[in-house]
Amino acid sequence: MLVQGAIEQIGDSADEEAVHHQGDGEGDVESKDNGSKAHSHFHGQSCENQQGSDQGDVEHTDSGTGTNFQSTSVTAATFSYDEDTQTLTMVGTGVDNGLPVGFTMVAVDSNGLVPGVYSLVLTDGYAFAGSLVSGSLSVQ
Image (tube, rainbow, N blue to C red; front, top):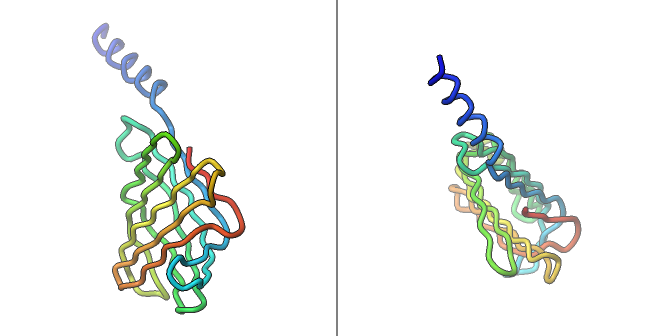
């Protein structure tokens, strides 16, 4: 019993020390290639040292191409940091106009120094990369 209690206590303290990360975005993004606009929403979260804690969702609508993507599952939400930026990379599956696809979404927050950068690549060949022109993007 004493060993069991010690193991549970170690497990509890590891949970308390886990670092939680979160990224959120909602707004219009403009393509760096051709100036087309799309609307995006994302939410991602993860906790260090806690397997299975990656969660989130991504929605993206590009009326110029007819793309209407919604995630159904997030398999990874990875956060990285350097001196001036915080980056969220999300990988998973979803549907584009009702058809199943895989996706990779990257959001880069530069602490308001420059507009947030957003990209989405789908396995059906769709790709979008651009900057936030209205709304918000935050990675912590």
